Amino acid sequence: MTSTIGRPTQLCLFFFQHTIDEVENLIKKHEAFEKSASAQEERFSALERLTTVSIMIKPFLFIIV
Image (cartoon, rainbow, N blue to C red; front, side, top):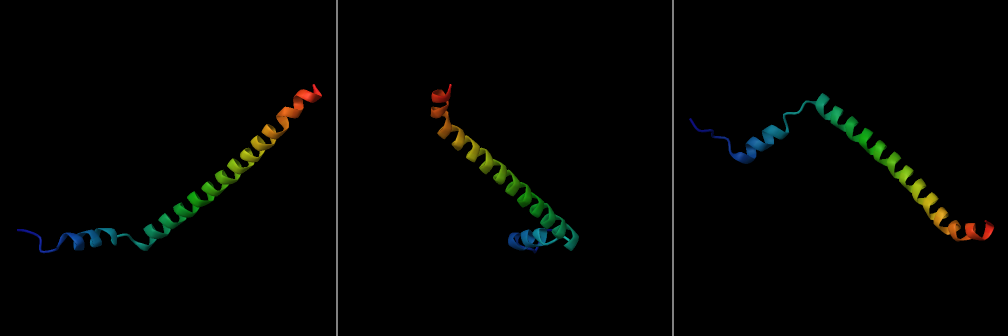
C-alpha cells in the first residue's frame, strides 16, 4: 500500500512534531550559545586591542633599552 501523503506534507509533519518543551529547550540552548559567542567576541576584541598596542609600542622599546 502506498502513502497518499505527499512528500512536502510528510516533511511538514516531521518538522512540526516537536513539543513545546523541546522548542523551549532549543531556544534556551540557542540563547546560551549566543551568550557564549558574545563572550568570546569580547575576549577576542580585548586580545586584538592588546596586540595593536603592543605593535604600536614595540618600536619605542628599543629606544628605552
